[in-house]
Image (cartoon, rainbow, N blue to C red):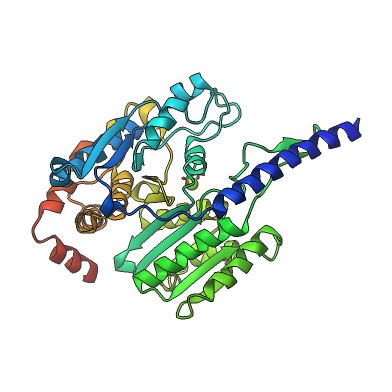
Length: 399
Ligand code: IPM
Ligand code: MG
């Protein structure tokens, strides 16, 4: 009996190895980053998602179209809405991303995605793969860049979370070997590690940062985290002016709340799951996961999104219109920067700091005691329009 089960498990493992070796060959093909200054029109796809997604996505689209009115009317940028990345439609097709939706996504250079529901065993939906994870893998969006900035506390962190490997690579291909033995597979490759670590060091160099912190648990997870660490040591040789250190994920979670230590960290690079967890903690320090946006970057495509989920409870309790669009607006600011609109992006970032952390003329509470998503969008637009925004921001930060 066991011999047969072991054979089945071995065959399963063989398939995973073959798929991953093929993926490595794909990663070896040299690709350059898209140069958006040469692309016209740059097509920006808007994906609403589930739960509060459509509300915050609609609001973000309104703000971005307003800020980008000139680029839109000159034909440089084109916003497009893509329907169908909803849990209902995904369940209907039994796919993380239905084929026609994926085709539409691939016709865009960049997308801004509202949160999508991620099914889990027993939640009433078919247990299909997460749309986020599928999109990251399908479009090879290997760098999940998550900034957390709290100027008044001297915090300016940029997390480079690896986005296509680790426990996520084959997270839906685990195996129940017997009724009692469940095994998932953790995948770390040299190529996958090198490209994310390289991106982190390059970012640190570009921003004039001095420190890169590499987070693993290489003392315990010796093979895969060991490889990540080894590749970091290799990549770091090209960046002699940058000081890098390996930290363990457990002590890292503690140090993010150590007020004496935390502002020393600048660029942090980490495998997928540690990155998932640590960036929620970091965002919470900034004011909650609702305040943080993220970029999922690949060399050809990129996708920008909030770091939080779809908050279905807000919808069933009739509170969707009070959902905070800050996270997706942050993601929008990152998108603008990525496609070459640094100045507008910088203003939007500052406006979000002012509205969310300092001035707080209107406040989101997630219910009718606070502002609606639309009111908040108006507040952000007014703040961007303020000709004194740079001084205003500077004064708040220095106060
Ligand atoms: C994130 C989210 C996703 C992840 C979920 C929704 C699949 O938590 O973007 O951090 O685990 O990556
Ligand atoms: Mg997460």
